[in-house]
Image (cartoon, rainbow, N blue to C red; front, side):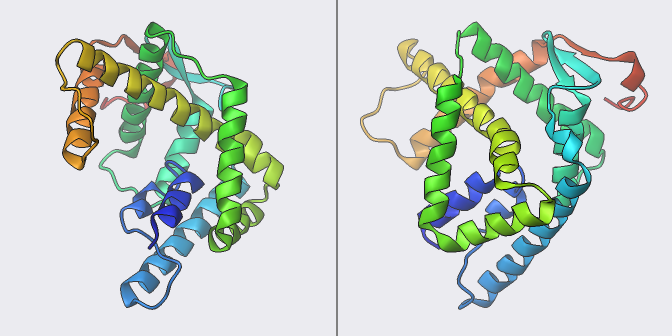
Length: 238
């Protein structure tokens, strides 16, 4: 499978199809394994579409009850249920799915907190530009565009709703976390904790990711986390 098509599938949803990204779905059916991957992909799209169709209200991320706060940053019930529903539809398995999703969101909120400490922001213009780039990439790969259109149609959304709600939510997170990643890596190089390199290799990428994760881990461990009284029973094992 060409790299461009792989990236298209990843951009189709950062977490929506993340379980399938590792199987590198191919649009070619020449290989039996690729055909199996395609069937698996189509099955996930079907389940995700059904979830969207029955839970369009969950796309209003910053509305409704607040389940928890991480360093003062809220985790809304809508966002939690959106992520949980998509994880289940994508085949994610966890001993306790509620705790699993909460941990994921806590880590993201810690990164949002870190972004504020670094004075990192994402403008609406940047989000719009990112989405327009995605649209262009989909248009360059008709097979990928067809899959996206199938998902949108089956979910009961219009294209405008998809790009202006769900994908806008993804775009903001991608851009914010990418800026944070670059800032932390640059700071690590300035401090001498990471070596400055002329060429990016897989080993360097792994080293950078490990460094970034270690910084985030440190802040996760010291984060001030409070769960709303209404939802404490839900996360009693947390």
